[in-house]
Structure formats: structure tokens, C-alpha cells
Length: 418
Image (cartoon, rainbow, N blue to C red; front, side):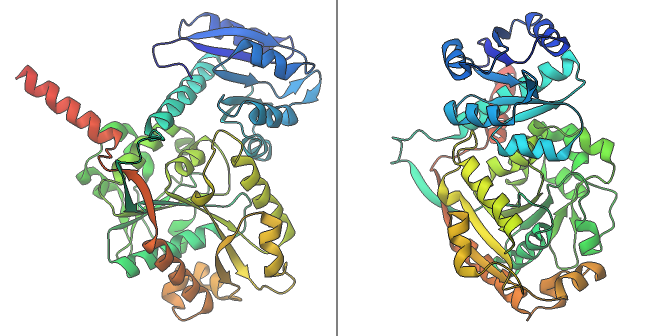
């Protein structure tokens, strides 16, 4: 991808009409972007894209009157290093999830303004550059060291699998197991319910950190987090949907970078909606815990997610993905022996079905591992925490966060001025 100072070469894939005119007008008005081609036919599409050598692909929801979901899937396979931005016909979470699972890096919803378009392209550009800068060069193995896991993202491509329950009880178990500073982040920005599950009442949430995202200090973070009676620190999501809509991926990235400086382990409940914000959490995580259940629908979605990310821009290594089978052994469920074959990926942890106990713990606002500490599911989550506490990840020996670097640069600049 082009650097910050280079023009970003964009190819638009869309039918003639208002959307094409809007894209042309927006990109022609800014020197930072160059609209190098507009493709209005699926015939020879891959050849035309390859010839244009774009930095980004902007794909409308229809091409020739046909949905472009399969086209996005094909483009991601053929050009895994070129981010795809999808244009959706309206607010439809299912379609948004489908295009993200197909490999799109971001999406916009019609009707959109030229400002929306340019803002989305800039965010994708900035995130791509950050991801590339954070990747260590392959030959530089001499400077690599193993360090404990710092950020764990708990995600499920299908709702109702118990993702929040696993994230909450895992964070509590890590606190008990390690005795370290553990933070639970409600990354499910819309309709999160950790406050209900933990019986927490706080006016503060992650949105309070957004205005200060580029320069967070420990004092401000401690003012915003909520402490549970167990000692676990929790960063809740907004209860106001409009406020949640205003949180951008780059803000979340800066917040994630900052909080890791003040906590030993961060567990993110990333929910089950695949969007720009949840992808930000998944990208930043040392390990991604994929929660699934032994039913065909959940296993199908999880299997598709595993296959898609291995050949999309996310390009996570196999060791980053840890499949967690929740409600294992539930009556009528798929046999445990058939699940790994269905997923094409090993299962890292099994959490047995625990009857009505998980539901009772949610309704009473008392986490499962506290309410029923000796139950089979609670024991399995504690075993999962022990396994994760023993894992290591590879990092550069002189690893610095972007925030630390910027603070050092600011300090040097102020000393020179003085």
C-alpha cells in the first residue's frame, strides 16, 4: 500500500449512476486519492483489477443488477493485500456481517456523503499502515523474545454461543490464577450486557476515553473503569446507541494501545458482529478465542470464519486462533469427535454444558465462576485460564507501543525547545 504521503490508487467497481458519480466527485476533489479505474462489468474483472494496480477496491452492492458478495469473496482471494471497502444498500447487520466474512476490510451504508466516503478510505489507509508497521520483519528473528499474552479477544461469528459469558468468566479466572492486573473490555459496543451480568452500575464507559484516545494516562483510565466486587476492572460499552456509533476504529486502536500499558492482561468481549471496530480488537489481540457451540449452524459459521480469515486481509496465523467449544456434550448436539473435522481446525478448550446454571448466573447478576465455582463449566474455564497463562507470544525485544514512541518524541521535542 502507498505511504501516507503517496496518492492512494482506488478502483471503483459499480454500475453507472448516482453512486458512481458520487465516488468520482469525491475522489477527484482530493489529491491524496486517485481514481484510476471504474469497472462496470464482472467480465474479466480480475484481469482489469490486476492491470489497474490499485491500493484499495471500492465495491458497490450491485454490479450488473447482481449482488457483489461473491465478487468480494473472489477479489479477496485474488488480491489478499488490497483492502476491499463494500457499499451496502442500507442498515442491515446481516449483510454487513456477510461482506466482512467474505473479507471486506470496511463497509459504508447508502446513502453516504462524500465526507463519509473520504473518512472511511482514510481510516482504512491508516489502519493498514499501522498493521504493516507493527509486523516484525521476517528475517529479524535474532531480536525476538517470548512474552506472556497481553490481549485476548473473545469472538463468535454467530450470536447466542455464550461469547460474553466466556469472556467474563475467563477474565475472572485469569485474575484468580495470575493475581495480576486484569481488565475486561466490553468490545461489543452495541447492546452489550456485561453490566447486567455483573450487576454493575456506572455512568462511565469507553466513550469517555475517546476524546483523549491519543494521550491516555493511568489516572484517566482509572476514572472511567468500573471495579467489580471480585477486584476485576471492567471497561463498559456505551448504553446510548448514538454515542456508540460515533466511536471510530482508530480511536479504539489508540485506547487498546494505552490500556495495555497499565494492565498485565486485557480480555475483550468482541461479541458476534464482524465490523470495523470488532476487527480492530481482533487485529490487536495476541490470541483470538473463537467461541462456538455443537450445533450445525454455529459450526458452519465458525468454519467459514476460519477459512475466510486465512485468505483475507486479516491473514491471521493458525496459532492465533483458539477454538473454544461451549456447551460441549449438550443433548442433541454434534458429536465432539466430529467437530474438529467440521471446523478444519483443532479445538483448544471444551466447556461442558452446565444445564440451567449459566442462565441463573446471568439473571442474578453473579458470574458463573463465583456463583457456582465447582460446576463443570466453571472448572473448565479455570483450566482454560491456566492454559492461556502458560502460553507465550513472540515479540521484538525492544518492542514499543506507538503511544510510547509518540510520547518519547514529544518529550524530545519539548526538551529541544527548552
